[in-house]
Length: 365
Image (cartoon, rainbow, N blue to C red; front, side, top):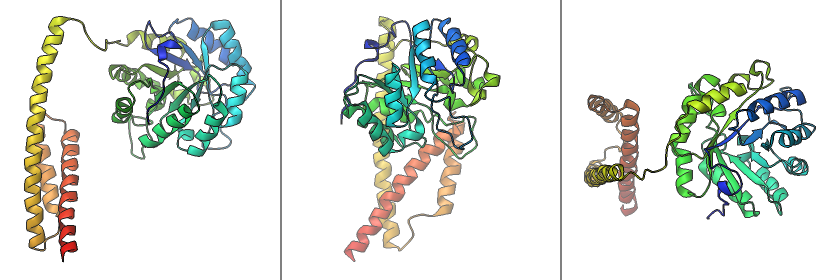
């Protein structure tokens, strides 16, 4: 289905740069909220002040935000700084309380996005309102759950909708708290070009030292903005202290980001780019032709194995293909992981086709 979306610039002034959302991971005290808010407002770069009022935590005795009383603190932030405000909601009660206190933007967190029942409850509570809603990607890399949550909210009449890329859980050791898997938000943007997509580097990185690199990559991928956590004193934060910046540090980070144009009007640039794209088109056509020839050969191999009663998968041959192709790719200056992934994709299709050929024999026997 299509999404009915109100363009971002119609409800937030982003003419001077990307949307910037910042504030503490959790709302702790009124003093903490106000000190952080004044520091962020002084940057004159932050559009929206965020704070975790109700925080879904893994363990019950972890800090879960100050709760409903913190909504009055956010109302004060809006009144005294002019910044819009945003909080995470996980159920209908949260929605009702947040809207009653004039919160401008509600966001659905990664742990809630995975549960269609919870998302539908939130959607039903939003019916008939003009709220703005941000939907973070689910914890695991399931784009359909992400799309489903966006659709549920949109079907209730909410058109001020934003998708938030915050990375995905991985059991493997990684430099990231949540791996970016940039291809997934790119796919989402390809499917819904009208949908504003922003990035949450804080939850991708998990530590402040790597925030700038991820923020820059998000902007280079033409994302509409950033959500970065800030705290007036990160060392004293009651949750996610290692990924929060001081307002001053956020200012330095934002000043160092390169904001690139989506397109250039320079005729020389456009002509040269068009020439390079034509060359890419020609190379891609050759690649498609070669892939088709390869599949013809795979078909012959599958039929030959079938006729001689030989298994489809042969481990030694597969390991030799990986070793030799990766070595050849490295010689050609290609990234080892890239070559390995291409080989795995080709091998997966080869196995699928050869297995299909074997199945045809079974059906005919």
